[in-house]
Image (cartoon, rainbow, N blue to C red; front, side):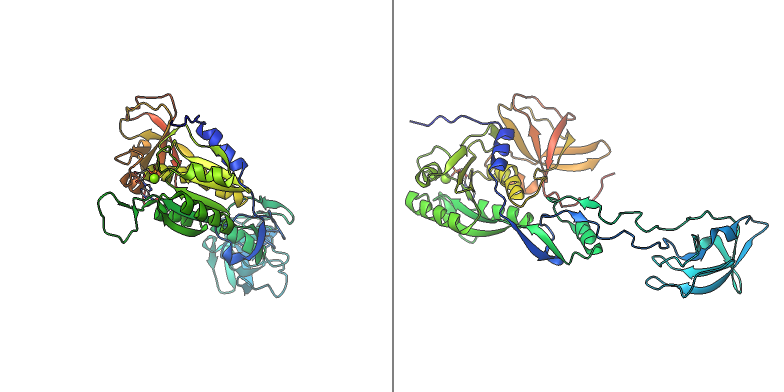
Length: 418
Ligand code: AMP
Ligand code: MG
């Protein structure tokens, strides 16, 4: 008898998985190794930024009062007493009618309270003249104008990107407390599977899910241990799943979660005493996606169908892994787009369509990336986003507004079509 499974809504399923994603502690890394990690402590300004009053331009540091009354007819003349390059300091304070030639980033000399840009001056033998009065503080980057000592600038739980690294470096964080990263186990199941380098033989296909999942992990900067491919053999698969759970922090398997004769993952979960969070999700593709927990570790049983497998990883495994890493924003960015072609099929379940978005004069247009069954591989290859069509809808026409999920959030676009 075929088991009847009760579908759970996608949102509920994702939240359930995230609720079971356990953090695995923190570690201290040297700054250069923190890209892609998650801050385990907030970034607090250890000093004012900038740390001293400085010049934002190449020009002359003056006392504003000495420029009072300057005009085109009555130019004010200044005597230049020296030069301050970035990283240098003035020998002495300036006095009435004096100035220092000053470069961008250099400390403002004592008594000076304005900077005249080079372009605003006419040089002469002893210095320069100018034709307008300056305000006190004009063209000065003030100590602490960007951040004050003690201010919290970035929250713990934020993913570290190059800008975060710049900020950490600014405050001398040569070592940073970050969340530990999980190691994922990856196992592809299916007696039909061949290795990438194998020749095709009747009835067999090459394992594309294994390499794809490993690349999805790599895109997130997550390390993994590959358990290769296993035939649909209950005992052998049980043994590998058990071993993988000892050796890794979470396990991603593909295939074998359906109700076919050789779909052994449900039996394996039962044998091992894993708690199944759900085994049917109201989504297409990937309704058989199953997630279980054992000893606090998540087991992702993704469908063997490539499009379902890909989507299952992005929807469930990715936010769970980010949550394990302490990230407080684990969801894929979502935005609206204009549908690029008709999609008339009904959507009894929430539908996720591999698609490609681009910028056009009409805004962001997302178009399904070709053959779109759950077994499709080429649409994953062509796609750069996922269109989401809510359950209970049908008859989407070109030009309608739809939602898209953006893949590879740290990736930029190649060109603007505007
Ligand atoms: P399953 O989820 O095991 O029922 O498999 C569903 C479909 O996905 C079948 O047509 C399988 O042959 C195919 N499939 C399973 N595993 C893989 C894999 N690793 N790579 C590519 N296709 C697969
Ligand atoms: Mg199978």
